[in-house]
Amino acid sequence: MKKIQMVDLQSQYAKIKDIVDPSIQEVMDSASFINGPKVHEFQKNLENYLGVKHVIPCANGTDALQIAMMGLGLQPGDEVITADFTFAATVEVIALLQLTPVLVDVDPVTFNIDVNAIKKAITPKTKAIVPVHLFGLPAEMDAIMALAKAHNLYVIEDNAQGIGADYTHSDGSKTKTGAIGHVASTSFFPSKNLGCYGDGGAIFTNDDDLAHAIRGIVNHGMYERYHHDVVGVNSRLDSIQAAVLDAKLPHLDAYNSARRDTARKYNKAFENHPNITVPSGLTECEGICDTCDCHVFHQYTLNLKGVDRDALVAHLQSNNIPCGVYYPIPLHRQKAYMDDRYNESDFLITNALIKSVISLPMHTELDDEQIECITSTVLNFIDSNK
Image (cartoon, rainbow, N blue to C red; front, side, top):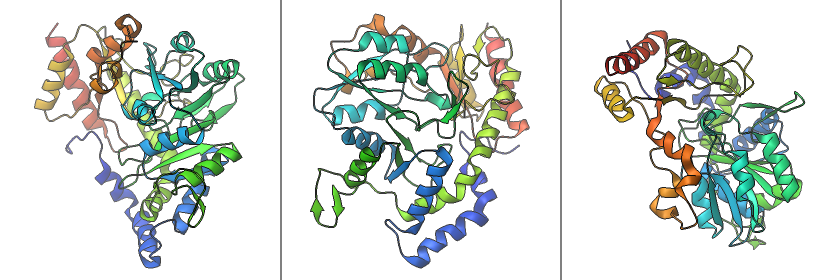
């Protein structure tokens, strides 16, 4: 059996080496390392894939979130609502811009931001909502967009874990995540579903004026060389990373399909186990149906009941099976983001999830032998420690 890895980028690269290497070599031969033709090609191809008018590449996913907020013209003291159960970058950029982060609880099934919690958190100072498509499952975008419209708020999608996912609207139509809100961000960190071989990110929007503002912000506030019209940053996707991403983009749907297939196999192994709640698609789906394209499984995360999660982590690691805990500390308890406004009673779901979730290896190269080894090791531990 091959060594089990949390993410196996080496095996993935081996399968597309004949496509990736010439794409990189083209950049090397041209020496157009910044804002070269490959960046523009990738931008256009990603716009077509997502069905969004504007893709603005940048240096990383955290920059993408920050620049999206800068483009909206949010001012110090403006309140931005987001989920407590997510990676710190989401709240980090809010704080960096001297905005006021407002953390709220999540749904116990989807782990995504709780719409009712958003409603309760809106004040006259609220200016934006940042839903995170956590682990690759879209947030409840119809309800969030309706709420934003009613209160004249911006919606900034954090699509770092959800690229390629389809959100099915109440009328049955579908839109790719990242093309629904007023603006969206994503990360191309190597382990993402669409990852480059370094750092990278992008901002998406259908708003022409916002896109224009963002294009200036990513390049020192310049629209014309040495004319700085707005306060900007230096955040560009380099041409080599764009070449890698453009080579991988045609494979994204196949990659996401492979992740769903692996999730189905995991779910089958853990089916009806009293101590394990498996992930699924959106609530109207039965499990992960054959046509389900709503979940792209950036992570495959179990919710355990009556199990010593940390002991299971140690057991898996002792058997050379990697795993992850996303996330062990809620944002409202992180030293950098503690605030007297928060009450523990407002984070009951998040406070429970940090003790009970565990993420198993999830990538495009997992085979049946590896999956059987992982699932049997998990089940043997749980069943022998009842």
